[in-house]
Amino acid sequence: MTKKLKKALTFFDHHVSCISRRVHRVLSSIPQLQFVLFGLAMVIVGYIVYTGSSPGNINVLAIIMIYSMVALGLNLLLGYGGLISLSTAPVMGLAAHGMRILVVGEQFGQVNYFLAIVIVLVLSVFMGLLIGLLSLKMEGIYLAIATLFFGYIIAELAGAFELFSYGQSARMGAITFFGDTSLSWIHDIWTLYLIVVATVTLVVIGLYNILKSPTGRAFMAISRSQHAALAMGISVRRYRFLAFVISTVVAAIGGILYVTFRQRTGAFDSRWNLELSLILLAIVVVGGLKSFFGMFLGAMIIIGIPEFYFERIEAFIINRGWFGESFRMLGFSDVFAGLMIVLAILFYPRGAIMIFYTLKAKLIALKQRKAGRDVSIDVE
Image: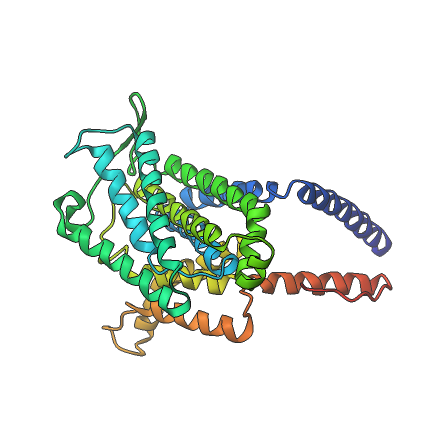
């Protein structure tokens, strides 16, 4: 029986290894396929959540997907371009409110949903050019402060006009796509979630293609040394503008997806504020600079853990009576995000995604050692 079991395990291990090598070859030849598979995995996870005991958690999954995509756009600035922006959240809010203004049409008449997307994205390009103009004159902490006040100006201006609901959250209602086909957050939340996953997947594939192109290599050269990039004939001015435009457009897509899924714009003072910009920055740092899947991992850590587990932890502490019945974990999500940033910088400066690469390397080394081949594994 033992020999049969051992033979069966050997047979299984051999076929799993063959399948693994074939999958690896396919993904190596078509790397974009890994993002498609990841999107399909998120569809499966979303379906399990939606049909489970807590279907409302699909809202959290959608927000995690949207924020991870926006963080990837910020990662293009920070990790690949060596730049920084703290105006990401207000740009998302402006895009969300812009979609409502155009689609609802209370002031200027209704605009088709897809035409409204085009208008908002074109406006976001000009906004990215404006932020990029600031980056030509300043760097580092000065650029961070400038973009911070740029976002502050956006929020204050939105709060001063009735057109933007004085900066408060406003309802957009069911979205009409084609003819009489409309989707409501109450009745069609699963379809809206699929739209979020599909859009995020397409945007991530687009960013991957950009970063693996000569444009991406130019971003990398500029982030390492502007003088060396200039010596190689790279236009620093042009690629700085391009980096901010791409990041701003991705942030605008995030705002469009948010208002499409939630069908509310969100308020500038409670949703599209500095806190969200810092959370997006925390997702980049914790997940891992220059890592695509690291953005999703960072979003799961920074957003998912507080949303899924803090309420249970709070109930557990209250039931134990450790801090009295008045104990609440309000604000602990910010403390948790700060703690994760500190831990990531101390132990995993390249992001939590390196934990998986390290485990993978150790498993490969262990397998090869068992096979009698002691080969050093480069985690890089």
